[in-house]
Image 1 (cartoon, one colour):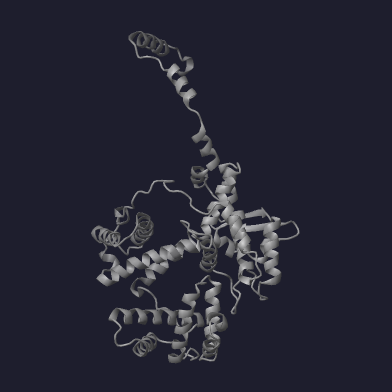
Image 2: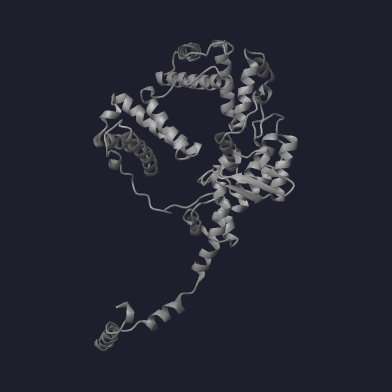
Length: 449
């Protein structure tokens, strides 16, 4: 690992023989697996890891404390920053040291982030438990709710306000302040929905006043106002071809990209696949949809099946885990949605500038390609695992072939037809129209009267 990062052999020897070299090398390999492929950033992280290892004992039995990390950061800054460095430079270096140290120590199990907003933790845990156990929300949705509410609780904690003191004025001030600091309309709507759901739950439990949820108004975002943006199908084919190499990470990521682009799977559904979901005898793939909680069977195409088989035979670590996609370095564990998303995003960025780089853009590309090939909205919705056709209607706005036909259509004949059918509004025409309406009004309806 150090030989790959450092250009000079003497530098590589220095880092490979330094303190806790094995722990540092394992952490760097994990960063690469999770998509952190920027070599400049990795070299900076490598230098910081050696500085951290020289000041902290990562093999001690007890977890490293916050105070130990801060003191180590100050000692490193004092010895590396010259007297001419500004306070801003020193502050930035200190924060960077602490950030990398906590990431590394957390990876080694020697650092645990303290609970955020402990004064509101029981109420938040109770709310999230109901979302998970009673309403069946996915882990991704629960994580979104958790992040949004923790921001609100941090704001409350700084002001010293309890849940009992919540009022419409306080809730409005929270959104006004954050909107002024740069929140977009979509962010305000998402966080407003999370806060409204919690306040409604808190009111039922008697933690706050009744009716507060109705005072939280989200901004109106019109349905299908935007466009599903992503790479076109030619770029997808180029992406798949670029991943056809002997590198283990490319081998694994090629199978992931094919599953997302061909079947339109969500990245969480890909990470949730197990070895038992592959039926090689009948050439079937079983997928558990995250949104509608249904299990869907798909035919296993030759290209996707060969990519998965190549990954299983040549790359996948030998371990007891039944999950299909695993990390490539010890300790072997299932790939997280965040790690898989980062890996896919790095490969998509290599294609060139694009509005979105995440794996969901490949799902959009899959739907747009199927639409161009003549599949109906219903068929595409079933393929993507949508519960409602309305979720798929957005792709009708990017049906390039049909829109091109409309743009090339000659509308002169239609204009002439409409002009010929338009009757002038004259007194004679109105008189005849009135007589017809009178005949209708005197028409007997028999038993319906």
